[in-house]
Amino acid sequence: MSPADSGDTRDRILRAAADLLDREGREAVSTRAVSAAAGVQAPTLYRLFGDMTGLLDAVTAYAFEEYLKDKRALAETDDPVADLRRGWDQHVEFGLARPAFYVLMYGNGRPAGESPAGREAAANLRRLLGRVAATGRLTMSVERAAELAHATGVGVVLMLIAAPEAERDLALSELARDSVLRTLVAGAEPAAAPASADPVAARAAALREALRTTSDGTDAEAGDGLTSAERALLEQWLDRLAAR
Image (cartoon, rainbow, N blue to C red; front, top):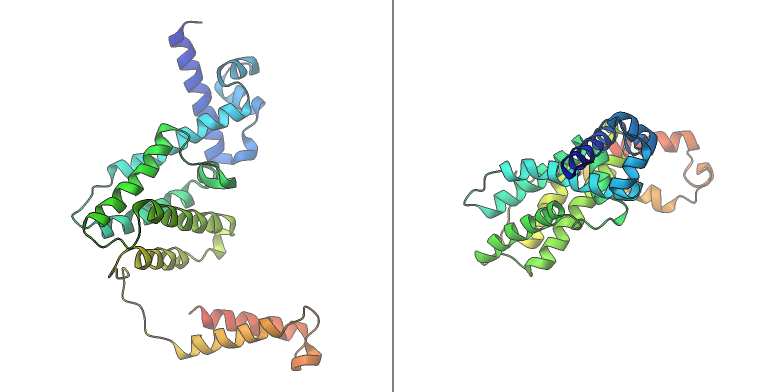
């Protein structure tokens, strides 16, 4: 097989594995399934990638390239803080749109900078923060700020991916984003003005926490006069009021 043919075959296997991962999740990416989808025999896969770990490393690099397509298309403005905010939102959108890719890229404590595209993604964040630093508004070193923003953003996305889609609280991403920006950038304001305190929500949250801290994991009827079913219903109502 010529080097060109070998490269074409490698690319076909890689795309087949990436497509399986993107459509059906990590469990679908097996030697047999990838070989069948690419129209090759298993020994060809092993010869080109070594083993499944090698193939997944290549798919991770491919996923970063997909991630960077939108990043590269995102035009920068003269407001680096606004660019950081848009970059955060785009990062979250990618993770929720392509969760199997995202978990492969960032899950299980996986280093993000093993491929050129992964290193480019990390460098983009540092460069944006460097622009903020150049204005004199960054409250810490660029490297530390990048670590904080990256750790928080990845944690939020992985938590949202793990939640059932119908139960995802997407407002958590905005809250985390604005909290991080206020920590990193002197004088940073949230994208929208914060709502005034809701006394009902505040009191519901306080009562919900009081119930939580006094619960001993057994039937609470003896302690507060409520059955387990009544207590569960009350907690559900309080959670909804606190989150409104």
